[in-house]
Amino acid sequence: MLVALAPAYLLHCQAHPNSLIRYLGCHSIRMPLNTRKVYFVVMVNVLPPQKCDLTFDLKGATSNRQRAKQHTDIQALRAGTPLRRELKKTLLDKDWMAMQIRLSLSHKAAETLAATIATDAAFLAQQGLLDYSLLVGVILKPQLGIEAERSASTDSMCPVAHVHRSVDGAAFYVGIIDILEKWGCGKWPVQSCVLQTVFRYACCMQWYNPRGITALPPSSYASRFEEFLAVHMLGLAHLSQSGQSSWQPFW
Image (cartoon, rainbow, N blue to C red; front, side):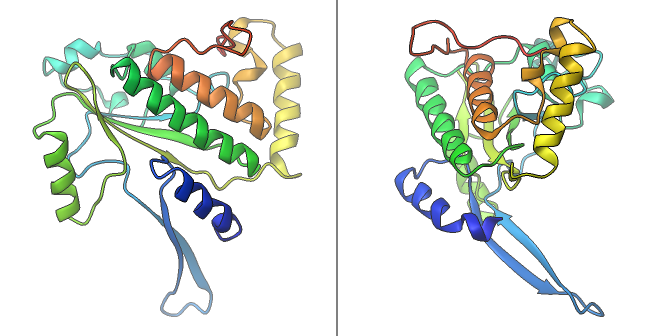
């Protein structure tokens, strides 16, 4: 999939050098006592060498993704309260919402990041891709400044793609990952049809809104991904061309 995508991806990166999609290459290696090649891809590291306090995998899909039952208040974490076991794993969209975290940037910086996300999502939709996520690493009390962090990560051969400093001092590391799923005519259309049918007719409760499932056509997936991050990560009011908010809850 990455090899097929490479020509279009190269043009995308040349036109948008701040893209959050940072693949470096596709390689193969022949393992000992194994006649078949093993293929793997290499990406720019999203997370820093310093261990993150919290890590999130955000898709905008909330109807069929699990969430932790309880959360530690974000202010308690800043005060040094130890993380509970369930918060040490990679958390999902509803966890982000329950903890009410925001990447508090200046309005101009937030709009710039939202535009980058929208451009990347549009590219992925054009290529017929879905199921990708925004990986977000959060360090509540960074020990180093952003430039020092970048320098340290470069020196350790772990370049960090994108890091943003929130107005409250927290550092957010972001990157789009897992893009190599094609809509095609296989499992995704079938899964989408089945889940939407189940959610529409088996239960009429709001949090089973079928628009919140993962298996949406690429254009719908991209639109929801962009809207969710603009509203819930950046705190922007996402407006349609009519001037009305096009975003609705998906849970």
